[in-house]
Amino acid sequence: MIKKILLSTSLILMLLSMGMSAGFAQEIPNAYVKVNSLNVRNSADIQSQVIGNVVIGQKLEILEQSGKWSKVRLENGSLGWVYSDYISSSSNTYSQGSGSQVVSRGGSRASSLMVVANAKLGAKYSRGSEGPDRFDCSGFVKYVYKEVFGRVLPHSSKEQGQLGSGVPREAVQTGDIVVFATAGSSNINHSGIYLNDGKFIHASSYDGKVVISDMSSGHYYKAFRGARRIE
Image 1 (cartoon, rainbow, N blue to C red):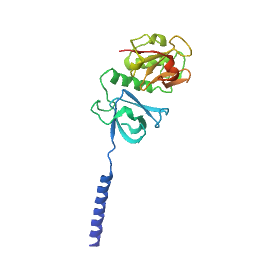
Image 2 (image 1 turned 180 degrees about the vertical axis):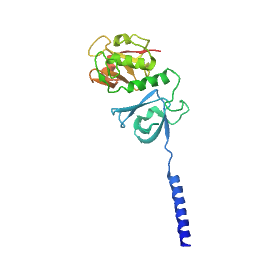
Image 3 (image 1 turned 90 degrees about the vertical axis):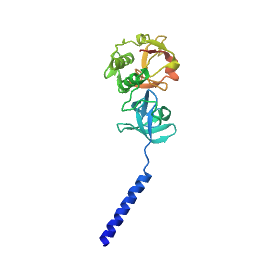
């Protein structure tokens, strides 16, 4: 009799525990990337290391928020921080699925290009090189466009600055080629690929590797000589 009472008590306690756990459990909110390409960083700081990249429509789990930043879990389980202004709780506007794609210039085209470009972050700078492990500036642009689109571009920043159609600074989009006149030169002598939020990725002789730099202010803002869009 005592055993039956103890078993019944244990069962009741277990059921109550399960019910309380379910009551306190909170569903982790999801968010969706609303820009063509979004960097994932290792901390809530624009200067922190870029550890990955997500594309428009990709689903993220929101784990924590700090100011204008959100800590997220990616579909592959990786953790990182993204700028909250570039994600949305609504999925209605975006395509669904892993690595989701939007069939437009700003969707699948730009997304594929950014995946390839970001994979080369940190690769060493080497004058005259065009990959796969070492690059100069125009060699990097040439490599990315060849890998993504099968397009063979000239290995020259000046010639890359004459391709496709010109784009004004305020209309630059992810994947556009951006060109500069650096080191006091009056001629185009540097090129890279625009990301978003005023940033571009390029092989920098100064840094000695492929880096992401700001072109919305400072040196590259002044050195900017145009953007080119290759459809």
